[in-house]
Amino acid sequence: MRRIAKFHKVSKEQFVNSMKEEFPQYTEADLEDMYESLELPKRATTGSAGYDFYAPFAFSLPAGATIKIPTGIRAEMEQDWVLKLYPRSGLGFKFRLQMNNTVGIIDSDYFYSDNEGHIFVKLTNDSKEGKTVDVAAGTGVVQGIFLEYGITVDDDAQGVRNGGFGSTTNK
Image 1 (cartoon, one colour):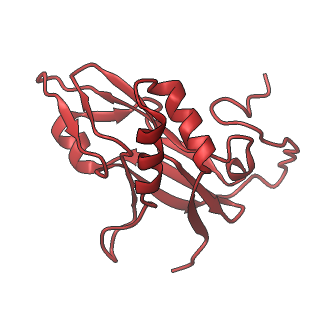
Image 2 (cartoon, rainbow, N blue to C red; image 1 turned 180 degrees about the horizontal axis):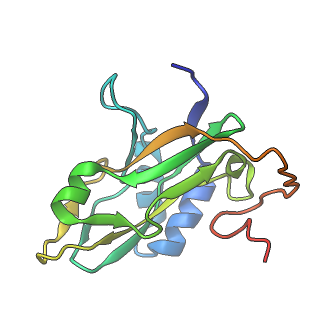
């Protein structure tokens, strides 16, 4: 198995600022405690393909509701690799918890963005049975899988990334 990536926390400042934008109800002390408690993604078993990303805080998500979570995590990986994010299987199966963009794509150059490559996940509880998803802080909510990719022989991409969602759109 080839080792091609490493997870890091974003800076405390980046995490706190991102959390304040999404969740202004938390105090500075709450956010610093959350930051100190952040766990880097890891695999549960030697046969697991996915690295679990953990919720930095507890939340309850009723059917039909959406939440955008700053994970506090960034991924440094070799060029020609991508990190794909999916909901954890159990949450998807039990509650129809889904990522709003279906699959999160974290490109290798995202690590160098102004926001430090801070990975966010936006989840929706699409339960058809009216179930509420209750997630404790530190619970795995999404899983990331590293994959190698190829490019076309006539590829001439010259752009440089600086940002996240939609930042590489040329038109």
